[in-house]
Image (cartoon, rainbow, N blue to C red):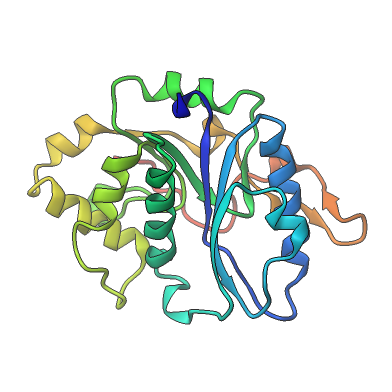
Length: 228
């Protein structure tokens, strides 16, 4: 069955002509996930094409050879939705979605996340706060179709960010029933997930991360909202 293998969607990735170093970071991420025999989908855009060193390690991708600035800082909805559609085309029922420059730094990610998910539909993490009209849009794990339906529940509002869009899409999907949202969702802390940012730890001289295990996503950069 497809879901015996972890399907990973790597998103929120764009490369300007002077940012080719991002491909080195992405290569590190891909090598980590390939060791766990993951099915990897990459979505993104750039002023340069994808090198063979990347395409040879991913199972499918959607890439635009131009930067779509409308997506940056807005949740990259066009690309995430396209990634979900690719995963469904391949027959997956669950998916892990993260930033392409991040890692879930665990030896058996799928077993850990499945155990954590239990009978819920979706695990989310920071920056989630229903009181502040925010649902984290960077890390998701769970039911693929459910995830997809949340992202397409409403037309994306490009006047605000992905956090608010996902909140209002979710509210629309559940007809503003907060109890149903809390029943279907599970919030997990960044440290518990071992969600780390490879970019923040990257040593540009050695071309590899340094102290990666301590580079939790958003630490000392964004406010942790603490969940529901």
